[in-house]
Length: 245
Image (cartoon, rainbow, N blue to C red):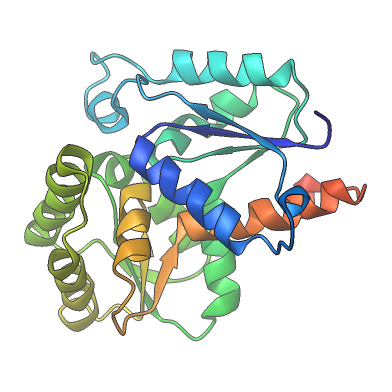
């Protein structure tokens, strides 16, 4: 296979399944051959990202992801995407092991947000404790010139419960809990736009989109960009990955 891209997923598998579903659903198709060519690596045994970020004595997710990227680089994909926001904690180290461009999901998400909602004043961020602790999204939001809010401990507890108790453990989305979190960020913390900084939250958005709040979903952004870039490489167009943001 030529002119394809690689998806590094499995963190978690339901979130990766959501990415693939959206990718196939949103790709313009009339026949089988219109779908995009890609390789999916569903590496579900990668150590917990949040646990390692909060306590570096816990197993690191860097070595297995670096090995995945090295293996995939031998196949020469045109680009790669990592379907886990928290894993971007080691983005620089992962990009350093390959010449293949790895699309930076948080950076891409905030770049799209800035273009879509230029009048927004205050941005809410909901994510795992690991993503909050690694400041990847926080720094992107600040660099884009926005005020931001992380909510409070009660919000964080609800977010963690939705991600871990409901989605990762039970395999289901608690729609009322998700909507309550968004409402709290909007009403109590005055957030114009809420960034979903975890792919499990992306799954929640896919399954429970019936709410009035403005959100930026990093996974949906990377789906759109995967389609855009995938179709370009199929047509033989060159992509300047240094200027895509």
